[in-house]
Image (tube, rainbow, N blue to C red; front, top):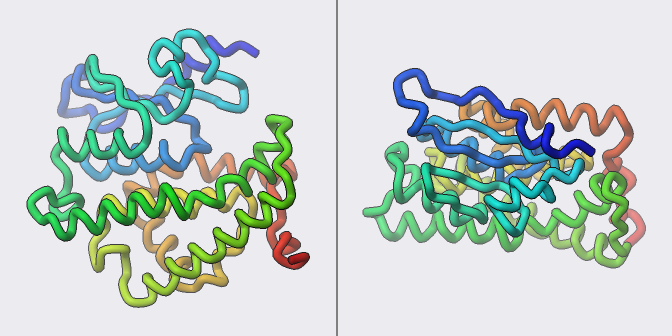
Length: 254
């Protein structure tokens, strides 16, 4: 492994034509990370200039001493804004919403009721919808990282994922986006965990409203930009047979 070479790979800074390079935030990101894509799509939506430092977890870049100086825990995403270093996804997005100008209605600080509902969705995304994470590890990254997740855990994770997607489907039957007719911070959080399920070929179409919602969100230029490389990775995963064919899922054996 040559982690130093990997950690130095950079993307061209975005949206920098009218701003100085010193105003660009740096995002340490693995393209498989839904939280990282969330941060990128929010920067896109708010026209925040940014540059990406690629941290390839599968290759062990997160163990690189230089990266550990930035985040001793070795997790992604990490946001660097000048001399400020912010770790943990929710801390990052709340920092951006507090210090940068967001689109109108995106995260309204002066509308406490709406803001609280957005916060609730962000929390639900992190604590509930992410329950599919063990499926992703067990059926995809487990093969790459030589990790084995007990079958009993995978069964529970799949049941909870189905329950959470069913709940989300009922909500989205009544509205286009999570808060109504406009995309907010909540949508940028939730959609990325759903699109990550593509890695295991999870059939989202059986949740009609969720499927419609994801298709609508992927038409948004900011969300689309954050998924550009991820879509290529999904294709490579499937072509190499690393994904799990969900049509023959554990649910058939429960």
